[in-house]
Amino acid sequence: MKTIGFYLCFVGFLVPIGPLAVASDAEDSAFNELRAEADRGAIAAQFALAEKYAQGNGAPQDYVRAHKWFNLAAALGHKDARQSRELFSDLMTPAQIADAQKLAREWFAQHRGGEK
Image (cartoon, rainbow, N blue to C red; front, side):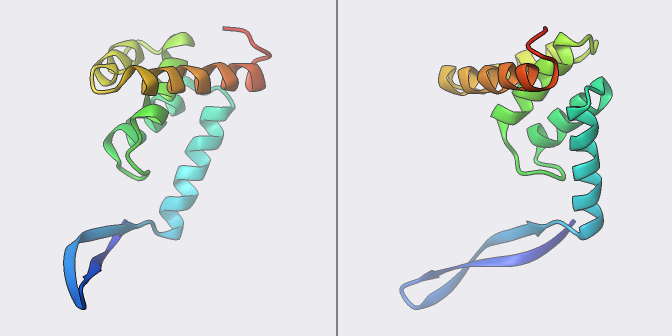
């Protein structure tokens, strides 16, 4: 992942506020393939995708999406996903957890015909 400087224009001055990550085409391709594998029900890919969202590594940091993928991986039998989901639940609001659970239910309905 490449980074570029990100600046905020404040009253006529450019103020550096930190690097902005820019994914390369290869990273985008790898992420898209991981996402496709996760959508096909590959438990290891679901867990890896959850970790990417949780850490903001190769994907924007998003605890709701991380929880969703940890939840799916746990439901399908990944041995570490339940513990990871619980750890991130402690960092989330009840509304965020509800959103993540809704996304997981929608995924099951779309990809598994509602089975869980």
